[in-house]
Length: 155
Image (cartoon, rainbow, N blue to C red; front, side, top):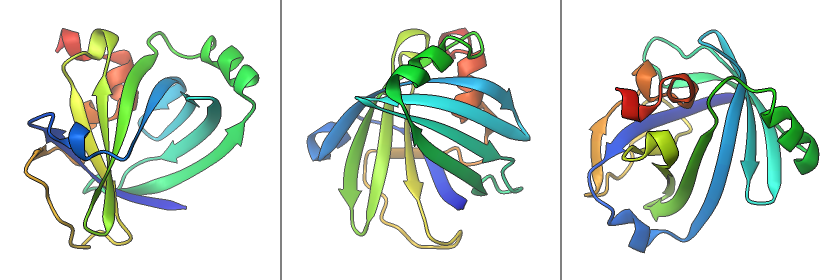
């Protein structure tokens, strides 16, 4: 499946009041090579393995394959992941016909807040709430796989 998304910094916490759901997420990378990443994610009581391909030149589209896996087995795989495991809280916010996913990062990534919106086409129009900041789509340093090996506190 091709994932089409745009990514933004967030300039205020107003989105929290607008959210309809939040999840605690822990994720690590078995492989964070830019050509392909393999991620293990624990999301509340569920777990997933995700493989993502290289992004297109604009950074908006890439192949993504994801499958739910056994939570206990995922926990064992987290132990095999590269050095740094990401911890974040994800908020879901409905804006128009789209849902934004806003991540507040914890630990060594404290202070970083990113919003993503998935689209059905690269040129699809979408509403931009006032809390949405600078667009960082395609900037590799804002990919979770980069953040996992280069924590925000060290930038």
